Amino acid sequence: MVVLNRIYTRTGDDGTTALGNGERRAKYDLRIGAYGTVDETNAAIGIVRLHLSQMRDLDVMLGLIQNDLFDLGADLAVPEREGKAERLRMLSSQVERLERDIDALNEPLSPLTSFVLPGGTPAAAYLHLARTICRRAERMMVELAAQPDERVSDAAIQYMNRLSDFLFVASRAVNNNGAGDVLWVPGQNR
Image (cartoon, rainbow, N blue to C red):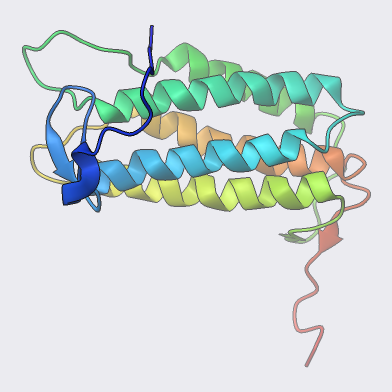
């Protein structure tokens, strides 16, 4: 359980922040950037949810995802170390749930004949924004995992990879199952 009695601590005034294991890192550290970008993804999804009054099933899916993203942030905030007790980690079952949800949302969609431009309904536009932030978080996590002495769980990276797919499919779902998609027309403005 998390207890936050005091919001400011002044411990970050020197440009560092604490990981979940107490280790202090610079606020520009790649690990801090990765879980901060996961948090940005979560905030963008919160905006999407403001526009889903008619799509209760998708809102429920996004609520589960928001909770998963806090799990993912907790996973990233405590680096894996050999021989140390495990903390909260992402699970393959969370990735599998996303895959089932993608399949359910994708099934009624019309086939794509072009790339989709971000737009259509407000919810779709915000889903595209969340998708691009999610992709940035994924790139940062992959870069972090490639660093010596840094680990990122496979399930965490897989989750973010699937999440960007989910957000894309969800954007089409809220655009009248693809009928309201704004399609790219190559060379249209030449």
